[in-house]
Length: 152
Image (tube, rainbow, N blue to C red):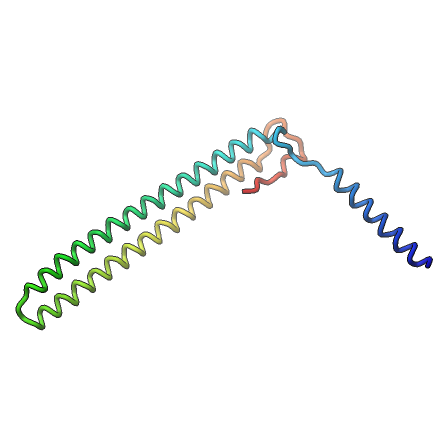
């Protein structure tokens, strides 16, 4: 019985000290020293998002133009192939038209993927730079608030 009382009192002491420690920690409030800095960082990240999305849109437009050109070239090549009277030459021309088309589409897709990956890579770099701005201590900030991290 005495052991149970000791264990319960120990647990109660730990619980109370944990609650007291949790209440003594401080955090930066939206109206605190970092609110202007946080707004600047959010604007910075918003700009990075806009740049990324514009880059991806341009890459998609470029891919679409390349595929449209490949379709047009295939159409012209197939029309010329079907105008041939020699069966072997016609089959070879048809095969070449499809090979060229697949190659052009594959290249367009590869270029698109590279551009999208580059846009995302640049975005990550830009966001890290924005976060680095936020982590720097603004003038008049307290020591406790300078270590806060932006959660995006």
